[in-house]
Length: 114
Image (cartoon, rainbow, N blue to C red; front, top):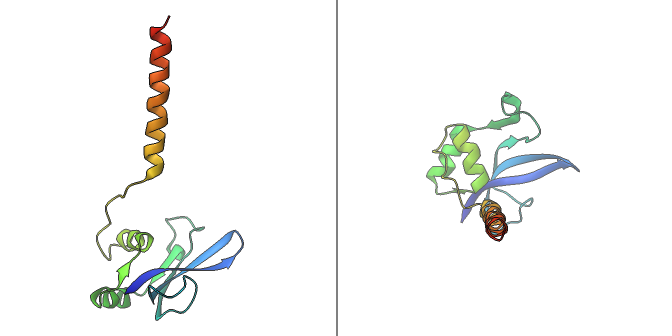
């Protein structure tokens, strides 16, 4: 299966990613079929230098059946190349809600026991 994904580069604490098309069996930073662009998460979102994409090649590979990963789909959605993906399940949010509910219940019981 073909995947559009991020391939990591850069140095320690200074990541730079290539947006590539690769077979899903290839390693993350290993062999790829074609480089479609790059993404630098350290640059502010407003700047043009943050990301560069070859839009025609991206559309070609989407037409060939390449599946973007979640992060690449978000990047493509931000550039209006494809629709923005729906927000997924964030387990961290569920943990926070659970902790808040436990805190509320404990405060309620302490108030009722007065």
